[in-house]
Image (cartoon, rainbow, N blue to C red; front, side, top):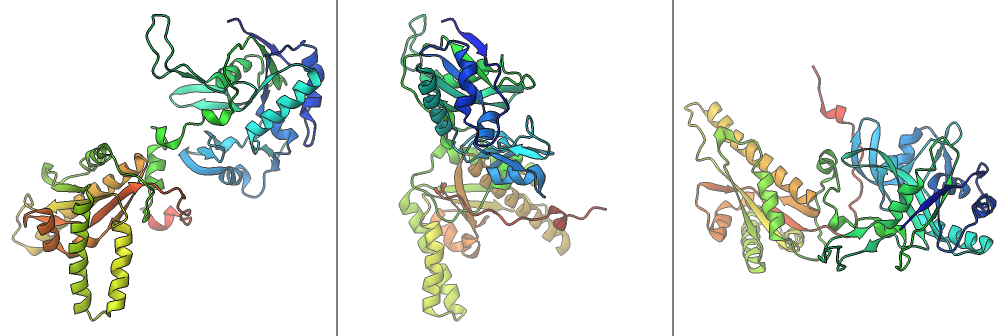
Length: 429
């Protein structure tokens, strides 16, 4: 296959409300377009024509980045890598100040695929040839320096070409090769659309692919396939206590990786004084929850709590723990604690082991979140040690440290955390 790339020259400055197809018609006609050609157009001129230009208000660019983001993926200094509502992960959620007037910003199109289809139809009608159309934007890439044009909108050609099941030149069947054709078109167009050259479009000839047209939204990797969904720092801050889970089970390998992370916590005296019991079967979970409920019921009755309140409180706890497809019970032992004659040091020694176990539990929760699952730590078993030991067959040297409910993340995102000022919790000397 031989491909030619032509810059589209002579496009006037685009303003909000302009008919972009009308502005592109004459410059494209001068290139004698043919059926099957693909037009690549920069996001900037599409956003301008659609009125996606805003003024930097009091909050400046940061405020617009926050408005355009659905989640923060990573942050370093003023640079924010964020996911937009389209699913794109890019610098500053696509909010850009380049090639626009002083004090103004451009935002990504509301629906780039719809914009691409509308522009493709208008150009096809005006020019009398069948065209493909790609809307491009420049994105950075993990692990590589520099930016490259990628497709954020696509119409009239396949955004992805699935070669799985086809043979390579040696006859070996391809198992994982899915080509991002729209991104390849976008990257190629960038060779003739330099940032400062005022060339907002390119015509590409020779993109001969026999496959149904698909939108650029198909290029966005779904969360369940995303191995690099958050930076480590963002992942720590993004972990939430989730009390209602989505449908499905928790694979055993998720538990194994979570325990692996738990075992990296700081540990006293070169020991790992923790254990984790995974209750993966429904009978095992129900046996533990029944024991917890009976112990709690007895304590509440001894406190003089009325029966209606007891039933309500136990039911509220059971909705969380009973609704989880997996329960994890963390344990700590003090067998390796150093003996001290004075009470103060003996107490500090015991607290050191407890703090270590708390760090292990936190690592466990973070690792569960990092793998795309939800969790909730509840104190439950702390208050019924004997009953928990009996059900889970642990000896008296071990102390249960609550229960971790684990499950698939729910479809609904949790409400945003209230803003906090870290300086309120920090004292510098």
